[in-house]
Amino acid sequence: MSLSRAKPSQVSIHADLTSIMSTFDQILERLDESAKEVSGGPKEDVVADLYEVERHLRQAQRRLKRAIDYLETS
Image (tube, rainbow, N blue to C red; front, side, top):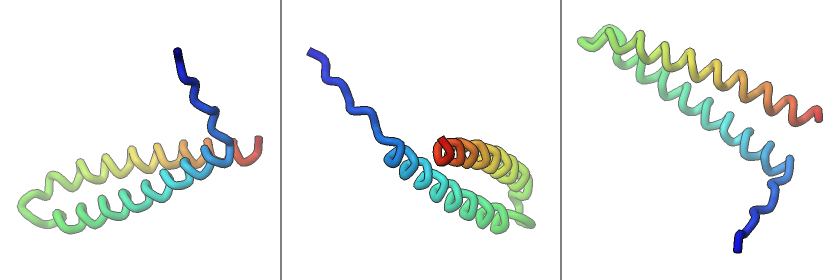
C-alpha cells in the first residue's frame, strides 16, 4: 500500500521559497561579516574564497527570486 502525499499548494510553495530567500539574506550577511573579520589577518587568503562563495550564493538567490516571481505571475 502506498501513501501518496498531497500536492502542496502554490501558496505553500511561495511561502517556503520566500522563507529560503530570507535565509539566503541571513547567510550572506554572516558570510560578509566573516570575510571582514578575516580580512587583514594571517588567514587573508581565505577572504577570496569567502567572497567566491558569496558570489555563488547571490547567483542562486537571483535565480530563486526569478522562480518566485514566476510563481506569482502564473
